[in-house]
Image (cartoon, rainbow, N blue to C red; front, top):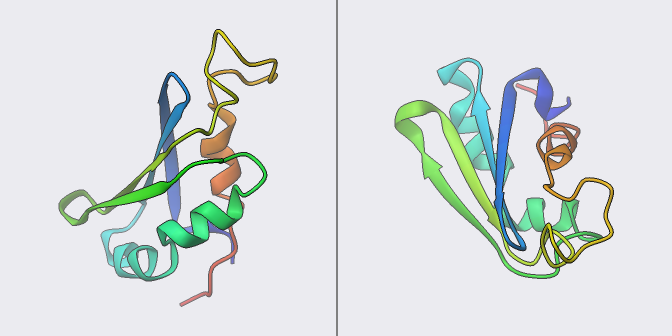
Length: 102
């Protein structure tokens, strides 16, 4: 199943760093997110975009994971020629990730 079936996402950016949150619709799905949406999988999923490290922060009290993607925005808003210079579409893109169903 697609990640979007059990979660929504928000994103932000600073310079060349993108910050993506994945939030479970139902808190009962948080353990599945925690197990399946790892920093390694996110790094692999965005392998054509992210040149740096991906760090995951778990926020179990709100059923969310937060990912910080370093060197992910082509140098940042003032330096990149990318169409989505703020990386807002990354929050939609991550929801296309395939995860095993429950």
